[in-house]
Amino acid sequence: MSEALEFEDRLSVVNGRIRKACDKAGRPLDSVKLLAVSKTKPPEAVELAAKCGLRFFGENKVQEAQAKVPVCSDYIEWHLIGHLQSNKSKIAANLFHMIHSVDSLKIMKALDKHAEQTLPILLQVNIAGDAAKFGLKPEEIIDVLKEANNSAHCEVQGLMTIPPFSPEPEKTRKHFYDLRMLRDELEQEVGMPLPELSMGMSHDLEVAIEEGSTWIRVGTDLFGARV
Image 1 (cartoon, helix red, strand yellow):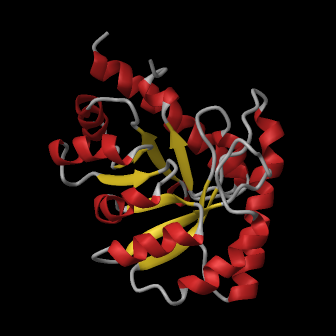
Image 2 (cartoon, rainbow, N blue to C red; image 1 turned 90 degrees about the horizontal axis):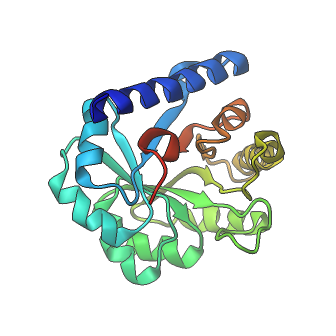
């Protein structure tokens, strides 16, 4: 089987899972966007995926994305999903269409300073209190949102989280539920719409969709295991 056909088959399976989860949750299919996580994959893999209809691609590292973006189709939208260091914020602010991993007020201010146009961002929340993960504590989010009102370019559109890995997807449900409830509380308290929830990956996307995710980040089930 050709590489293109193999990818199409994997994409069909992922799309089928998303469709089934949306049906179960009573959500319209277009309420969930598929972010193809292309970290460590070459530009050729990105182009193949784009020809199969994918538009949104997620990268973990600014330096890697810098090398890919100029050689890939210009209709692709690039999203940063990995931890961002402040010394890379100038590049990131004008390289990516959205940044999912803003995990401090300092990073948001740095991005706002360097962005040349409106930059949609998501605030990364360490919803499980996992010492091994980056992210704002839930109680820190409201101050960042209030500060965002003074931003010239950064536009907070929602929240993102990476819960502790569990081979049993149901064990991540609580974390996805907690993020959605936090979002709902913040919308009421700050009076700011936060429509986007970036949560759920290859192994637990169904649970994430059932709990309200709008961005599913899928790498392994689309591109195969990373080497």
